[in-house]
Image 1 (cartoon, chains in turn purple, red):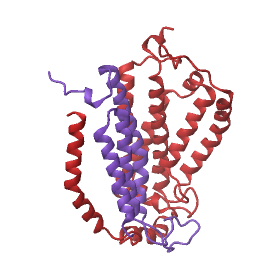
Image 2 (cartoon, rainbow over the protein chains, first blue to last red):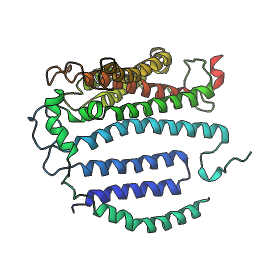
Image 3 (tube, helix red, strand yellow):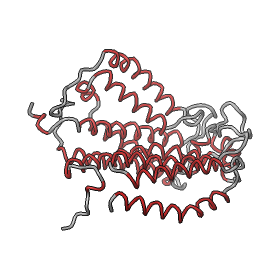
Image 4 (spheres, rainbow over the protein chains, first blue to last red):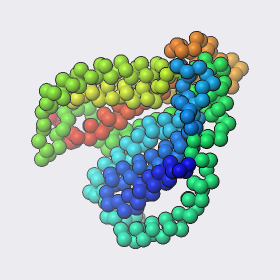
Amino acid sequence: MSIFPYFVSAWLFLIGLYGVVTSRNYVHLIGCLTVVQAATYVLLLAVGYKTGAGAPIFADHPPGTPAVDPVVQALVLTDIVVGAAVTALLLSLVLQLQKHRGTIDPNDLQPTRD
Amino acid sequence: MNHPNRSIAFIIMAVVLAPFVVAGLWTLPPFGSYPGPYGDVINAIGTSARHITNMVTGVNYDFRGLDTLGEEFILFASVTGVVMLLRGARGEAKSAAALRIEHRRREGRSEAVAGAGRVLAPITLLYGIYVVLHAQTTPGGGFQGGVIVFAAILLAYLGEGYSAWRRMARSAVLDLVEAAGAAIYAVGGLVPMFFGARYLENILPLGQPKTITSGGLIAVVNLGVGLAVAAGFSSIALELLEETRTAGDDQA
């Protein structure tokens, strides 16, 4: 079972990607994209985990107490917040799409030729 | 490409790539046996080198501070993009009238929602500021605390209603605070260079461990991130809420 968390990450990536591929609605597609993103968080945190170790915070425990890798936690922490802002950017693109083309179904959109 | 074709292409690619993914996952270090050494080194030296007790903050704002500057500018660019897309299409005119889409009835707020918003907004704001300020000591920091401050600003919207909230949350102020937050980080990194140090090098006094003034430059750039995140997310919320009014509302 020592690689089980990695397969959870792969599974999240796969179902997110499946949603992106089969999506009929850009809002739903962006939701699926955040599931794909969550797969990277699970993978990063799983790689940095150390059995029996605590959080890399030494306010209550003296430095030297076994602790997990703080680097991957820092990566995930910043990406969750920045990812939310990028999701907002994508959603405002969808708003503009609805205004200009009157649809948010990827199948109804053909590449513009001019 | 239409829907069935996309699914077929997806299945073919998934079947082809699956063995490589499984092989790759199989060769990762087993779960629970982090090989190090980078994280272990930071855990070992962080407290003595920077007088901080939260190593995640240490990585974000000091040991890998330049990466976080990049992340901060992704946030800045995203917020700028949202504002340009939505405000640019709508025009600069201000209006306090919200929720005026044709065919949609304007719902009054329930007293329970307004009461809960008014009670929770100041408490959440205080908690957010606490989380921002204690980045160096306990779990927290500009990113997490900034989002909690943003939650307090949204609760104020629930408590006061749109027009009152719109008078408090002015986009000019939010734009200024967000830019100031990003500038504190970028300029805070430049200042050590005038004293012969490297970009973002921590030359400020490190202070006492487990106090909010510990960590030297970490405390400064963390505050910049907190301001930028809180104001940036508020700008996004403001622009998205403004979408619910129509162009003619300015004359009304």
